[in-house]
Length: 224
Ligand code: SF4
Ligand code: SF4
Ligand code: SF4
Image 1: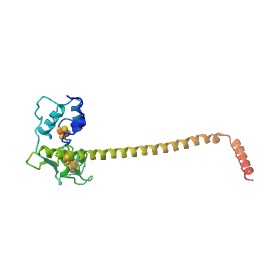
Image 2: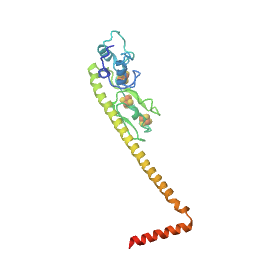
Image 3: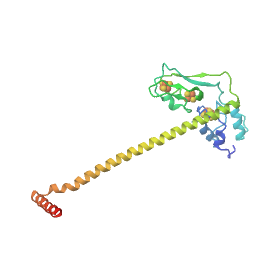
Image 4: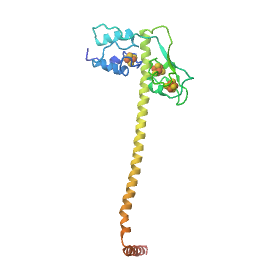
């Protein structure tokens, strides 16, 4: 394998469906594995023969492998609204943010953004999502490339959204921790203060009276 080939170059050839069918957690991890020489180049099912050949050319692989899995017809996910309980678990699984819905409300799939990757099927606790074929024709190489560009944008904007959300959550967590520490410090200061002042109560009544008289004299002198 040509070691100069980067994961980014390889990733640019992958369909970006992010389906994990290759056994990796998405297109880029698979690309990274190939760049490191840890994965063969025939594992991308949505890519079919076209992607396989592009990879072979880029990686300068001499071995002729057949696609490990057969490419399927274009399909999208559809949700049975009568069964959906609005748990939102499918939203978390969708790599392209193609599912829309608020908690405890019915969810729908925005089909234009759905790649048919099937990642939303397993998390659904009531099995109300089905993958349905939307065309009887396998897309051409040109159509696949165009689609890959669109899906990459969806996937990247989802990652940006998640990163932003995580940063916000971290900030909130830090602010809450700081607030808690300030409260704790104030409480400790209060305890220290009362411990320091408590020694007066342990003096004899005569001594306390003498001290009080001295304080009153000092105040009277100061006030004049
Ligand atoms: S599209 Fe291909 S490379 Fe990307 S996750 Fe699916 S199988 Fe893997
Ligand atoms: S809706 Fe389901 S099948 Fe469609 S892209 Fe999202 S996870 Fe994949
Ligand atoms: S996982 Fe299933 S039940 Fe939950 S919101 Fe999605 S479609 Fe509805």
